[in-house]
Amino acid sequence: MMLRCLWSLLFASLLGAQTAAVTLDDAIHGALEKNLALLAERYNVSIADARIIQARLRPNPVLTGGADYLDVFGTGFNKENQAGPAEYTARLDYLFERGGKRERRVDVAQNAKAVTQLQLLDTTRQLVLDVDNAFVEVQEAKDNLQLAQENLRALNGVVNINETRVKAGDLSQVELIRSRLAALQFQNSVRSAELRMRQAKSKLELLMGRTTPVASFDVTGPIRRDTSLLVPEELQAEALQHRPDLLALQRDQARSQADIRLQLAQGKIDYTLSAQYHHQFDNAKGDSLGVFFSVPLPFYNRNQGEIARATLESKQIEARVRALKASIATDLQTAFQQYDTSRDLLEGVEKNMLAQARDVRQITEYSYRRGEASLLEFLDATRAFNETMQAYNEARANYARTLYLLDSVSGKAVNP
Image (cartoon, rainbow, N blue to C red; front, side, top):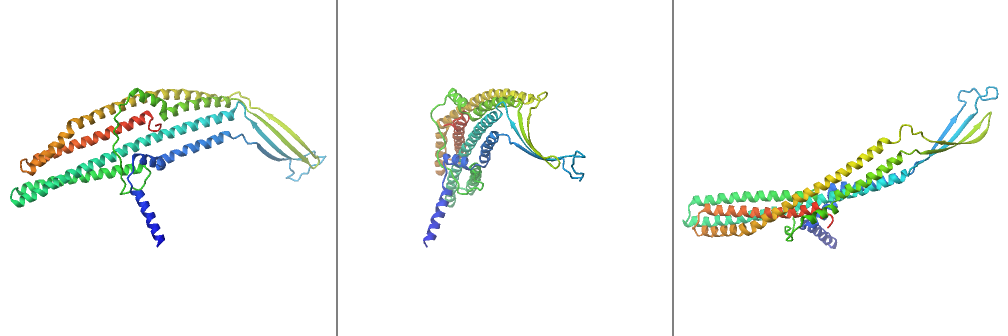
C-alpha cells in the first residue's frame, strides 16, 4: 500500500513537471540544455581539444629490423667463395623537429579551439533569439485565441437573446439565422486561432529539444515591454565588444598569424639521427654499430605554397572582420528603426484606437440588445474591435521581438 502511494506521488510529480507552464527563462534554459542542433555543435569543442592533444605529440622513433645475405639457396658461405656472411640489423631513427614546429602547432590548435568556443557562443546567441521569437509567437497566439473566444461568447450571447426574442415575436426568424451564421464564422476564427497556437507551441517545444509535443504544454509571463529608451551608439559599442561572431573572427586572426609562424617553421629542414646495430655470423662473426645523420636538401620544397596560403588567409580574415563590422552597424541601424517604428505603432494603437474600438463595440452591443441598432451595425463594430485588438496584439508582439532582436544584434543576449 505504501509502495503504491509512493508511485502515485512520483507519477503526480512527474505529470505536474510536464504540465507546468514555462517562463521565457525556463524555455531558454531548456533549449541550451537539450536543443539537438546545439548539442551537435558542442562536439566541435571536444574535437578542438583532440586536435590540441594531437598537436602536442612528438614524432615517433622508427625501429627497423633487417636480415641480409641469408643463405636461402644453399650455396654456403666459406672462405673459397667469399660469400656472406649473413647479417642481422636493428636500426633506430628519430626525427628532430626544428623551428619550434611543435610549439607552433599547439599555438594554432589552441587558437582554433578559442575560435570554436566563440562560434558555439554565437550559435547560442542565435538560438536564444529563436526561442525569444517563438515564445512571443506563443504569447501572441494565446492573446488572439482569447480575443476570438471573447468575440464568440459575445455572439453566442446575442444568439441566445435573439432566440428569446423570436419566441416572443419581437424578432424575425431571418435575423436569428443571420446571428447564428455570424456566430459560426467566429467559431471558425476560434478554431483557426487554436491551430496557430498549437503550431507556435510545437515550434517552441522543438527549440527546447522536445521531440514529442505535449498537449498540456503552455507558457506564462507577460509580453516584454521595456519603457526605457535605447541609445543606438551604446548598442553599437556593446556589439563591437560582445558579438561572439566578431570576437571569433578576431580570434581567427590570431590563429592565422600562428598558422603563418607554423608554416614558416615547416619550411625549415629537420634532422634525422639514426643508430644501427649489426650482427654477422657464419664465416665471419662480429657485432658492430653504425651511426647515421641525414638532412634533406631544400632545393625545391621550402613550403612556399603553404606560407603564401597562410598569408593570404590572414588578409582574407582581415577583410571579413571589416565586412562583419559594417554588417553589424547596418543590422543595428535596421533593428533600431524597427524598434522605433514598433514602439510608435504600439503607443498609437493604445492612445488612439484601443479605447474607442472597445467603447464602440460595447455601445453597439448594448443598443442591439435593446433593438436600437441593426445586426449589421453590431457585426461591423465587433469586426472593427477584433481588427483593432489583433493589431494591438501584433504591435505588442512586434515591439517585444525588436527588443529581443536588439539584445541579439548587440550581443547582450549572451553577455548580459
